Length: 334
Image (cartoon, rainbow, N blue to C red; front, side, top):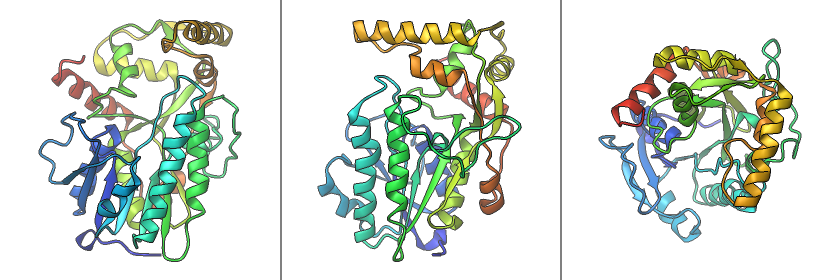
């Protein structure tokens, strides 16, 4: 296993100005890494303002850019992915989430890069219950929820791990659902804002593993520094039902939580209507049938492996919610 010391390693970080990427850029710099931050041409979101990184702009779909991007780089952390869940079946997601990631990893290996950290998703493993949360040993049921996002991310994980050999260390970080600052899109923060605005009528019967994005960023840095090659690490936080999570968001944001507890048949019916209406209009639904199915289940995960091997630390998710709240409010988004 290669030992990485921040003083002698330059890191190429893809998606460096995204929600996770902006937090990860700061975590890497704080640890002393020199960061080459890859941004899309023409994209200006301001999440890296004041962060001492080397900004480069290139389209990852253009493999001709790889040699210059990888020149002098000791490690790559790849966060770029499509997380869209509508349309649920979209071949372009595999092209971005699998094909592009694999091409970049192969180019990195050929360029002599020593370590590649791929940011996947905890959904690449079977979820569990609160009492027995899922972990890195859980089998993946391809096609179960009918989402190309999940299937393409698991396919990328498998293909990239197969490259772990001959001095090329491949590690996968698997985050859960995150809250925190620098969510400019917004992505996961949209759920927080809808609850805070009182626009969520009720909670589905399922739940998720909610994490502070800053913890996840620190966990990825730890995976870069000392993760075992060929291994995956779930980076999560607190396992909460949607009712518990919505109540926590409302408390932190000073609003009333949704009071209704929606039965699974009602949630599934709403999701089926959303998918059917979207198919007719071409407009993305607020809730599709695959998402309704997921929301009726417990998507709970354990970070025990990351805690034991990486020293992964988990703060209360309320702190991530508060940080997201403050960031949105400062920009007039909430």
